Length: 143
Length: 143
Image (cartoon, rainbow over the protein chains, first blue to last red):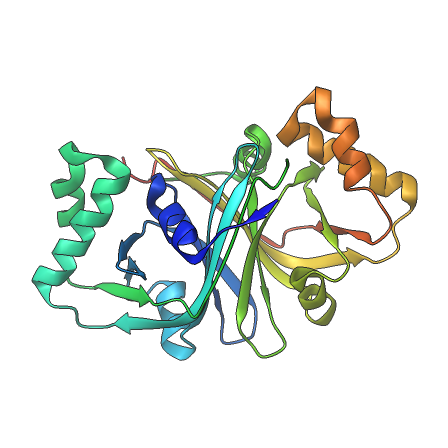
């Protein structure tokens, strides 16, 4: 097993179109986890969420989140980010569409990026930005 | 997007050697997320963790956890489990080795299962069992 540098960890996050799993905490203290599509804006992770999602409700109450991206094939790697998320409740329409399209392009390819950007760039969708305070990356875990 | 039945969701968990992401809550209320190898014992998810891991410490304090397995390729699917985990602090050595080997076989294949079972079946490793109270499964999300 080997530690990644901060730059290696950030690169790993978007090296492949892997989903990220975001952990938040519910009002009753239980953890919640769900998958999101992400992209990076410098060292800030950006993702969309619907304004009434469990994730959005939790972040609104307590913006401290943890996010993981992993490579689930041997020799296995993962990057975990921790920090305080910024929930953008009323994103500028152009900005929302820009990010929804850019994020979709990573997972659905060029041909479908615009269609999914339109689908995920509608009013009611929020932007979440996570500038990580802590980055943990490990690679070659099973070696 | 289509809802999975309970049986479809349980089947999905182990249909491929995908890792699971487990969310727990820290003493200060922040969420924690990490990846684990899993297997099923009937409808109960089983995984190993080291006794001093953040995950083990969190489950010891508050055993309510959430776990996700997703397929991160189009058309995308995921299963989320929620429930109260059972942390087995002093597992029987044979039981620990049995599960460590069985779990490793799913991710590392037959040839390396015994070696990884030995590596992950040592004193200090704990067993965690999650009998889900709630199972949410969605498939064909991008269709």
